[in-house]
Image (cartoon, rainbow, N blue to C red; front, side, top):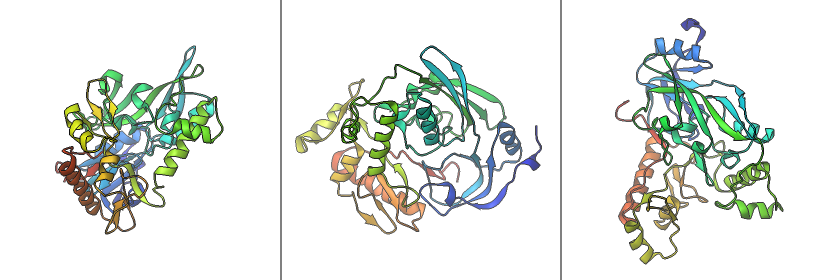
Length: 348
């Protein structure tokens, strides 16, 4: 094992380059991790509270981080096992998610094309159980490896171990903050792909592309076009994509909303509840396109909060909770942030 001199620890390090909201916060200590050996070395000298950072696309810093930040930069894509119609691919936790999708599509491997252009890293993807256009990470997940931060021990988690839910996993609940995910293994199809074109605007976009018998590459291209048209580029306008989860509610909650708004979009869930798009609820409350100081609600998609330049994390948080309160007052539905707001009370 290398000694601690192989890792470079920076003091009072700026975090603005490492969060897509572009918030100007600092970490008391910061280091990049390129291997499990480097991770274990850093854990020997880490300062509490400890934060594992991936692509920074799901984090809102409301002030400086008082402890140590470890940025997961572990790379590598390995074809681990081949079967008749599918392949297992093991991917380093620090690999950019969209780069992995493009690699898979380029190889002709199917299953994640609907998840194109989702920001963030592979290691963060299982934490959130990322999903889009009818596909979730759990649909292609095999296992992951993680290092326990307290001990440096390696653990392996299969799909049941992760307890995946809607934008949820064990790593957001009981095991939050306990592990650093170093690799994830996916099961992708090599032929006989099951294409999912039924969700959102994919079918319409394929038609405008003149595609009638789509390939996985066509679906990836369509998803990229849709996302690019609805979501701002973080390099141009700081954001974390969808700030809120789409609420899943009992049908009794939907019924009074339907009486006043018969056109309310909703999706039936297997457990008898319904999912209502948070963006629709926010838009009905008049927030879409509204600017408050240096932050605001994106003009093309009400789910997205943006940093127009110079916004503080506290400004964005205040806007988010003003939106939450107004939606609850109007519809009786309380939205939940999808973004992790840091520091939490426990880590402050």
